Image (cartoon, rainbow, N blue to C red; front, top):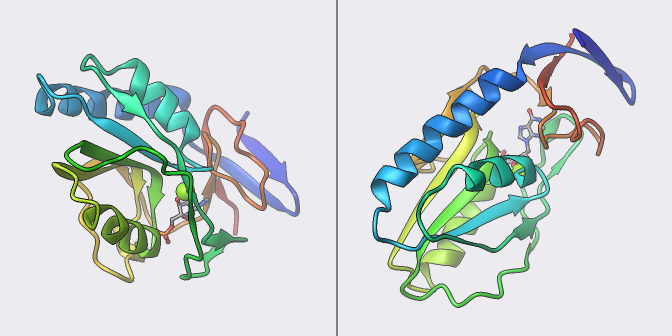
Length: 178
Ligand code: IMP
Ligand code: MG
């Protein structure tokens, strides 16, 4: 599909499934190299990162575990900039090698809020892996350790990312038509 209509907007093909999978594999290769002999805990931030988490985990060779968390920070086509809550972290992360997984880092507000919540529980280490990064959208500085692809400051959907809840099921990634 070259174009999709979701809710009230039209989106055009931007990143094909093969390009996405290549980016996922590149991140996995770095993690495989960096975590030899370690047993990291992957912590994907729902909802957007579920597909990335699933595909990434299939490529990991180390013993790894998974615990999804959820924050609410985003609606429509602009980041609200407010993160209200963090749900779901049941594991004791003290002494663990934590890798937070994001679908996309946009303003940085989500990670800026989430990272301190983890650091206060004394993990052995903490890194962030994101499939996509919009460096020009940064409003607060956050350290991102593994980046799949850097993209311009445009609104995208697909591969877990949504527009008003729609489009997460798309295998490819699409960008909004202006
Ligand atoms: P941030 O807090 O502004 O960095 O944004 C983080 C979250 O906003 C991401 O995890 C996504 O769920 C969502 N988001 C940011 N940019 C986009 C986009 O272009 N399309 C869909 N969701 C987005
Ligand atoms: Mg997200």
